[in-house]
Image (tube, rainbow, N blue to C red; front, side, top):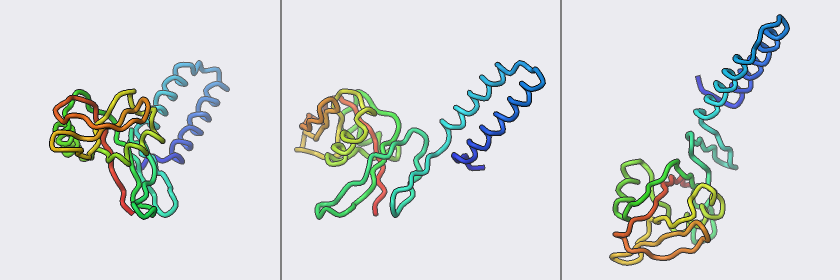
Length: 169
């Protein structure tokens, strides 16, 4: 059975009716309310979210956040960006790229990091994060999520990384 918002609303209504019945016959339902609230919180946390954007429906797994739509060089819609849950700390650029590949995600590009800063800044610590783009043979681009500044860092330095997935149009 798929857990949807409608399913959760139906179950919430059923629980409310059950609690009302218990209360009407004098049963102490304090513990039942706590249990029901915990159950509903668990259902909400594990349910996928379906996001409807004109022309596409995006299913977000638990913990994923929709960052927005990126435009290509011609100003036309290119792809939707989804931020994956979790982050890597104290990783070099090569280690971050490797971890991203193993986890089924990718490091965001510089443009994607700008979108993440604009729309999901609160999902990041006030620190710098690796991008997917090399700046030189020993350097790669980074994004500071405290002020939005982009700079280059030496690939061997250890920093943070977040992963994204792309839905191309």
